Length: 397
Image (tube, rainbow, N blue to C red):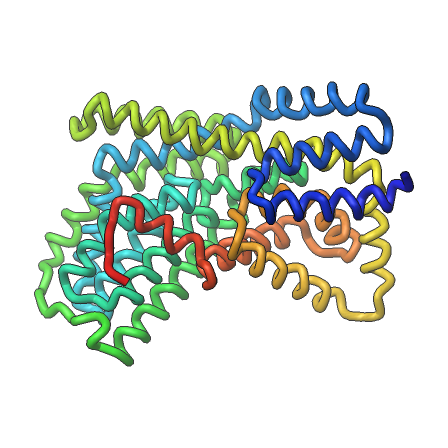
């Protein structure tokens, strides 16, 4: 079969498998295996499949993923998530939409030690949603606030999203993490601005609190979450200063929060076990997707589809920004149905060479694409991020 025809047919097969409900990692692996079998032979495809998964699960650079996830899990069981939420509440209480602003602030703060949007949304949702319901907040505002705030976990470093993007594109993970810092907090400020405007225009959606909080109490609330601030500076400061590689920084941060959980004496052995189990589940699911993406990328490389797509896009008599807008709109649509890791695994082997051919900075595109992927996760229908933060929380619709 002609390589180009095989590439198009393989891509079509992949989307059919996804529509039928096959897990993304397995769909990628099956498509890649079948494609290499057709283009070369099954004898070549079988060891290629084995190497892809073996190299993924034994990759040193990928160990940063479970370490970043574990940081968030440990911070949750030792009470840091509650401390940062109630500290933000002390500072924002008297502002319009104070609890909503506190939720965004807490999500941004928690994201500095948790690289997962799933963990951020689920952890802060358990704390923020009952509080906002207790004070009579509109459910649309409260749910939207937690869903949007949870998305910050994938953008504000240390971010698993940038780690995966860096691995798939062979870019510096450290530079990507640093590049995502300012955009992440700018997005948090934008979310906070939207909450403030909503609460100002519709005060009944976010009943105001007139309780005055003394300045000393505000400072005391921040000091109770000093371990979170210290962990952030340990990880990101170490990476920025060149003291740690991202993997070493993740290990240092996880160890620091492990000691914090022990000395705070708020976590039981069952809590530690649950944190480790959750870390393993999230990491293994991610690794399976990346293993499938590796064999799929090998197949796509054989078809020369990325190079031909890049040549076609470069030859189009339209602005490169118009092409970029189409790509980003595609991420927005895919985000309604797939998680960000799956989107990266599906699209980057094909899209990234075209991005380089059109002259876009790969670090800049990484930040923009991760942002659009997360935007898709909170875009209805169905807005999958909306359901994640409701884990353990029941609200009437």
